[in-house]
Length: 469
Image (tube, rainbow, N blue to C red; front, side):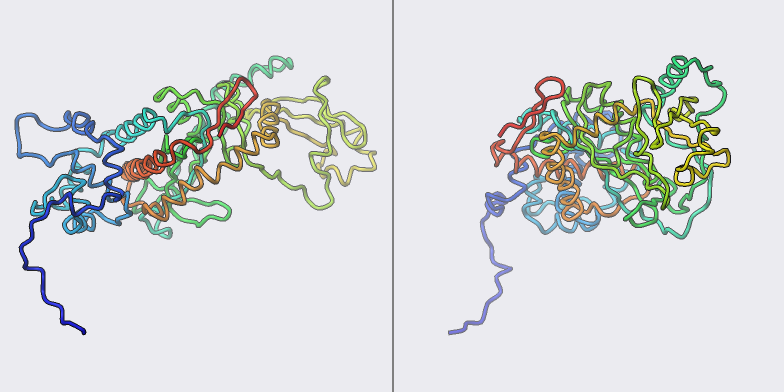
C-alpha cells in the first residue's frame, strides 16, 4: 500500500552533531591525522592584543578555507553557504547546529588586509609537511618536480606591450665563473665585465587586468595569461613537499634549484635522486644537481633537426683528448672561443672545406666554414641523460606519472586547480599553497591507510639507487 508522506521538518529530535557525521567521513580522518593547533600561535602577531572588536578565530578561518580547497568549492561565498547546511563541515569547524556562520566578506577582508603581505600560507604549508615527516609519510630521498598552468582571470586580448626584466636562473653566477675559467684554460682573454651576457630586458605582453600573470606560449598548451604552479612531491607516497607560483612566461628551470635547496634546508631532506620531465633537461640543471651530489633523471629531449639534405651535428665526433671535433670527411674542427652563453665554438678550416665533396651538405656559410658548439657543462649533461637508460632510472621515470603527474591530475579534477581564483601573484600563490596543504592532508589518510606499503626509493652511495618494497 502506498502511503502519503507526512512533513517531518518540524519534529523535535534529540541529536548530537557528532552522531550526524559518519565515522568514515573524510573530515573525521583528516581531523585525526592533522593537528591544526599551530595556526593561532602562528598568526597572533598579526592581531592587536588589546584593542578593536573580537576577531574571527584564525584556526576556524583557515580550516574553512581548507575545506573549500579540499572539496573543490569554487568561491568563498559558496563555501559559507555549504558550511551553513553541511553538518560534517560544522563538526570539522567546531560549530554547533545553531551557531551563526561568519560572513563571506570576513574571509576576503582578512585576506586583503591582514594576510596579503605575510607568508602565513607558506608557513601553514610547511607545518603540514613537517607533520607528514613526523608520521613517516615523507622521507625526501627521491623528489619529483613538474609544473602546471592555472588560467588567470584576464582576457588574453586585452594587454599592453612592455619592456620587463628577464628572469635570472639560479645557476648563472656559477656559469659566469665557469666561462672565465674555461677561457683562461684555453689562453683566451676574459670577457669584459661591463658587457652583459645577454639582454637584461625583453618586450612582452602584460595584461591590463592582472599584470602579474604571464603570457604563455608553449607547444601543445593554450595561449593566454596564466600562472605556473611548480610542485614537488615525495617519491614515497606522493605527498606534496613544495609549491611555488610564477607567471607563466617563466621557464621551469629558473626557480628549480632554489626551491630544491629550500626543501633541503627547511626540512633536512637528504635527497638522493630527482625525477624531472624533459623541460628540465638542461646543462644548468645537470650541473646544479652534480654540485649537490644528487642523481638526476630527466625525460628525453629531442634535438633540433637539421634542414633537409644537411648533415646533423651528431655526425661530428668529439675527441675529448684533443678537444676537437672530427667531421665525416675526417677533418678536424679546432677550438675557437667560448661565448657568453657558455658554449665552446669549434670551427673548420675554410681552405679545406672549399674543396670538400661534402661541402654542400655540411654548410651554407658564406665563409665556407662549419661551426659546432659544445657547452662547457656538456659532459655533466650527457651523464644525467644516461641515468634515464639505467634500470633504476627507468623506474624513476615510470614513477613520475604515479606521483607528480597524478598529483596535478587530482588537483585539477578535485580541488579546483584549473583557474586562479584571485588576481595577482600573492593571491595565486596563497591559493596553490592552501590547496596543496588540503590535498596533502587527504594524502595523509591514504598513506596511513596503506601502512607505508608503497615503494620507497633509497639512495645507497653515489651512483646507486635501489628500490625497496
